[in-house]
Image 1 (tube, helix red, strand yellow):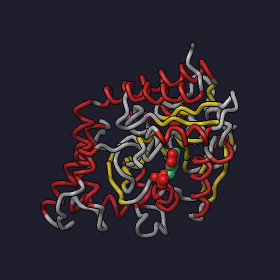
Image 2: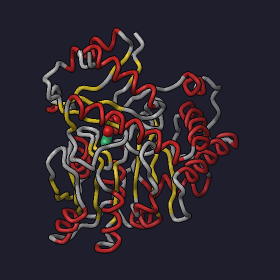
Image 3: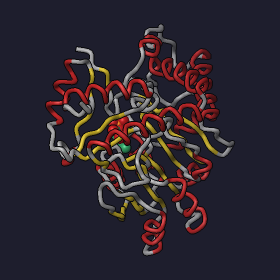
Length: 361
Ligand SMILES: Cc1ncc(COP(=O)(O)O)c(C=O)c1O
């Protein structure tokens, strides 16, 4: 049964985009592929307003590959991992699994990571990389990456900054050079509104220089290999998911047509409407002022059954998300990202109001 997905990924993908994948395949070492892929990179450069010292790239993988890319290609000896939810914790553990040392700055779930917390922790020990999660999907917290980036530039200019913006990038405003980050990445099944299977990474020249000095990068996780191959051939080092690249190419055209500012405004409008609704009936999990613009995490203060709600919503061809892991039933999440707009959000909230009897009589 078809359900319209208001979960924080995978999200809805229009038939127009899905159909792009029906095109006949081309060889990945041909001129046609080079044109397709270089075209996508150029569109990513434009959308994220990348200056020459930043490189965009696409990997055939889910976003998690980039945890390993950071762990294998970027962290030299020791990273500081800032955690305030399930995904940021996973990022830190992934770096450890790559054999690098990790110190943790653990912040309560639902609270944001602030520049002064990071600064204090970085000052206590020697770290070569800072890793954080921009949009903590498990709690709906949006960490202040622009402010953290500013502090890093001033106080720790030699520390490389790697950011998971898997569920934020595109929907939220991401200008890597303004943030001052060195690596930032996302999966396509979130705000790019494509099927899962690709990840987009943006890397600074500084990060590439670091990668050149890091040993045991692995093969698929070698940032040097990925970027060097593009530099020399405008192709990917290994066979990519060509069908999904067709879809990404089309998506980038649509995003550029809407403009980065337009896309952000649409997401902000959806988030603000959802938050207002949530505060009227429930409460928000994130600390005020640090709420995500792509996923709203709501405290289930009325003790309703989220599982039952989703069963009822399924009959109406909709799906939202329960709370993540241990937050299940205590919270629920609405993913308003990708192709969704305010009308769609109003529609889902109308259904929830009706099913849970929240509408004013
Ligand atoms: C913040 C964050 N990080 C990492 C991941 C894992 O991404 P993927 O499933 O694309 O590997 C997710 C997925 O929901 C996420 O939201």
